[in-house]
Structures are given as C-alpha cells and as structure tokens.
Length: 93
Image 1 (cartoon, helix red, strand yellow):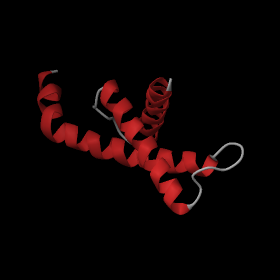
Image 2 (cartoon, rainbow, N blue to C red):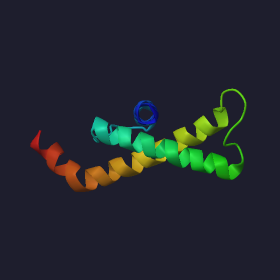
Image 3 (tube, one colour):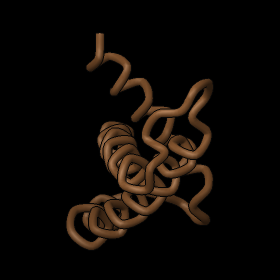
Image 4 (spheres, rainbow, N blue to C red):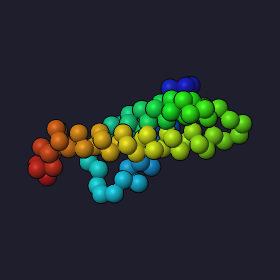
C-alpha cells in the first residue's frame, strides 16, 4: 500500500507544482508524477534534517517542504525535458 500512496501523493504534488509554476509546462503527466514523488522524498528528508520529520497531527511544515521541493524539481525537469526531447515534439505540432 505504500507504493500506491507514494504515487497518489506524487501525482497530487506534481499537479500542484505545475499549477504554481508560471507558463506552460510541456512535460507529460507520468514525468510530473515521478517529479512529485521525488519532491515528496526530498521534502521528507529536508524536514527530518530540520527536525520536523514527525509531529502530532497534520505535518504542515513537512508538506510545505514537500511542495517546495516538488516545485523546484518539476521546473528543473521540465526545462531539461524541453531542452532535449520537447523541442522536437513542439515543432511537429
């Protein structure tokens, strides 16, 4: 069940990150989901390093770290995607 939650959280974080980043992102949905999963992992690691890895109730601080990490990762991967594979796809259309 852990993998299912990781995919769901990654999907949601990736979509929120795409919505926050200005402009159009051209990366596919599966890549956005992977970036969201990576954002959740990195955000958890940063939260643990800062000392807020587990708190009673809802971990808002940890979720903010996850979202910021997902935004950074989605933006970087989308830029890399456009620099490599994306330009060919955009010119075809």
